[in-house]
Length: 609
Image 1 (spheres, rainbow, N blue to C red):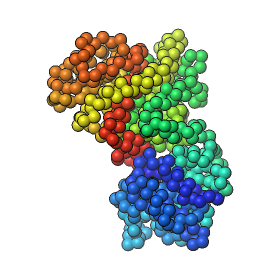
Image 2: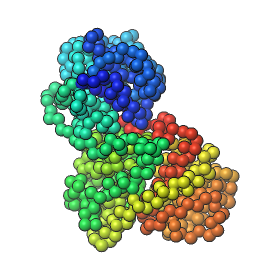
Image 3: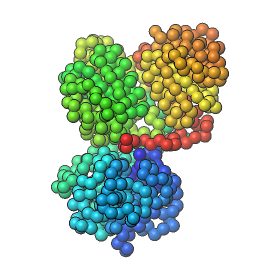
Image 4: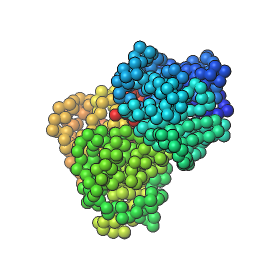
């Protein structure tokens, strides 16, 4: 949520900052602003407005915002409504800041520092700015001012800070909310996301929690919170900048659905050796997989759905008991975990605050931790004992597609590895399992090539107010994610149920013209699911079936639409049915004329509870 961009160097800052903010639009926001240091006036001039970055660009063109050092921000309203005054940057005295996160005790601080009557906005950020300004006025030392101010704050934050009388320098400090930085040929920059700086650099560093970053036009320095120098360690950006463009697709979501075969291949290949799952690429020794008796999987939203697939596979193949729990519940519950427990956290961004907090709690309780994330060096990766990077490349659309599919693939590898090292699967059986897993990119490609046929299902639900999805076994896990996708991008209410549960109450909601989508890919459960399909059809439902090719379906013409998925062993059908469900959501939103990539009220990275 929210976006931060900063630049200092030899170029006009406003153009670079606005371009960076445009690259961060997918994160979700309702206003935008920039602050540029003007050397002639020895101060920061600010331009901000509600609405899109293009509105900011137009407004900024009319103002004197000349300068080579500045910070910018896209805001998602939390404290105070959507107004120009509440947008960032905020300025108090000689200090200008932008802020991601929430300062929970801002009202107490406003009273403590006696600034209530001086505030121009309703934000926690302006209060934080005033605290920085207070300590800067007191000590005239930026490092000490930052240290003293940060000690006052309760909550999460990523601050970028400019001091009027320190030209050309940008300071940053964070707790939970991410900041990355990079050197370029013409200066240095920072951002809340790699997507913005990848336009200019191929290496980056990650600002650690309670570290202070100092950007000068020709250097980047890193300090601990007390001002002691730290070594700067850079990492390579491992995806092409072209990956963050639409490449001719109308929306990022369709592009990212279509990229899933390549993303799967990139995730699987480094972790398969001699036909067997191998995690030396991730520096995880085989002994690690024998060091626990129980697994907890914790995540949020789409990532949680991948974890539920992981639970089903691991318990089936490796016979290790697995519990799944939403991260926001995990952190307030009292989970029964100890040193013989593995806690697996899943997050596309690696910065999801609830999931990060769950990892920290698990570590405090003595559990081993494994992170599954898509972005190198992120908070969850740094907090975990081991980490598996999913190699999906940048995912720009707010609704996750390829990031989910590669998370699922990692769980397939983990399940096979656990079964192999624990003697529950022979090498021959494991090689056959991995061989089938490696064929999934080709199976997915068949569904992608058949997307126009899948689109015909969407036409049956585009005018619906409610949609129900039914499935059993792995099909149930698939429709949980499919239902979420439909809600996210089309705003149609959708409910996913185990097919056997439909008659235990929810069937009361099925009436004429109610769309019901069934996923029928598990052969041993197919007859039961077909029976459920008949139940809802007899109540007047529009019945739409996604079915594994080869499963018998008598009198197929009685159903409103049947789409046949490429046949594979039952436990692998989740890959193709997932892609079909993604396309159903995408085309429904497209036919409704909605902004598929930027659904209302949603943000790509959720860094506040």
